[in-house]
Length: 401
Image (tube, rainbow, N blue to C red; front, side, top):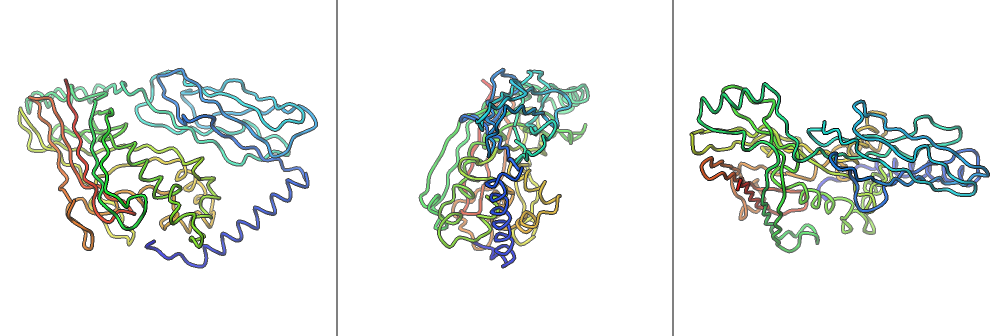
């Protein structure tokens, strides 16, 4: 891999193992510390706000007790009451170590973008230690993209000024996404060229950055239909990367971060993204072009022109929390191989031109267009990621039928 981590990581990792072993010895000797683990049961790892479909959470303790135990959990950051807990408190019977409760949406329809909620103890019982809070993703109703009065006024002004109707592009819009990945010698996961196609839906709204002179769109859910593919790539860059992360002789950084965050194939994390600042240019009554351009930091700290996706990833949220608390391993791996920051692995090269030393065969310029007459919106750009030798071509079509 590109970045050679310092010996500090190895020292920190060994310290982490020593502390972990010491803690385990404490548990085995029943000196009063009983760890509690929270795990989502089943393949579905997120709630949809508009659906009354529960998620089951398993509660597991390291040690059984000689009497019944009642544990009360709470949603720690849900001021608006988006979700609720059921079968709570949880009673764990004498001699048992497991119990369950459920989480449901209150179906209020108030979310406009993905939201993370923290589930933990309402009050920490004596002798109990929560291994880590459960971070739960709740997705907004895909059909919900209610505009406020200011947004409606702006859309009406664009109709007067430019003769265009953006209202038809607000809300849940179907899309078809095609990605064409090149051959890469950097990883067996991308050793062969492949093409993947997705049919999906995106929630589009008017951006807060829009003005009377400048229409700007925002994709708040599954931008460009790429959420499933980006998540798949991120997993193979990290905890599904057996070639580098878990092979004999791998950098201790990988073991350190996965142990620290409890991040692995069984718990790969919850990923979502948004895309703002989609500016309409060259506007006429029939067509307009899109300009979607931002900057990000490269591995070396340089500014790189990019499509400005904003990622949300539960292991990274946990790592940022640990960084704020002063955890040395989390700090050391903030921007290095082993970090859980999606920005480190995704969209690594310029979208304006092929980077020096990168195969430019598959590079395509970033551009987009909206055809008001034929009710079609198209995008294309060159995606890149850490384990790719070249660019992945991305083509997206939105169509109102």
